[in-house]
Image (tube, rainbow, N blue to C red; front, side, top):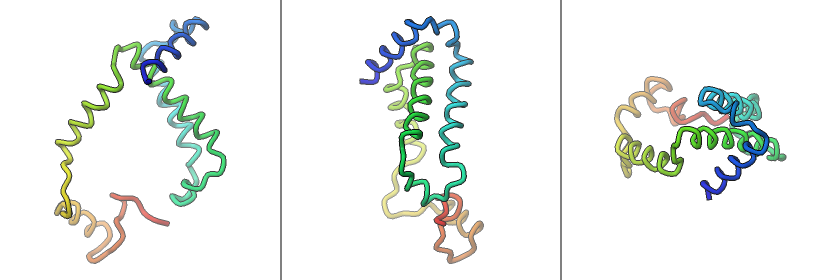
Length: 130
């Protein structure tokens, strides 16, 4: 599915002769710009409000813009996104193993340092509820 989407994007760009503008630098910059526009949709919302956006259309459009540029970048650099994601998940799985029922002591210590002993608030490491 993702590769069919990449082909559709490739054909869309080709029909408009946009390939000459799609350098890795321009595409990476465009990903950042569009991601900032996505973040702007949530900028002044509380965490609770960010779950309650009534019209997700503008958010979905920004997600699409980010994804289009990112898939364009992958296409130009011959990066297979599915493999890249799976490789990164494997790497992160080794870096951050699942620990059932055990709270990492360093995380516990950070919470105590930031929030004070006995605090139930997860603090900035897990996000605050407002």
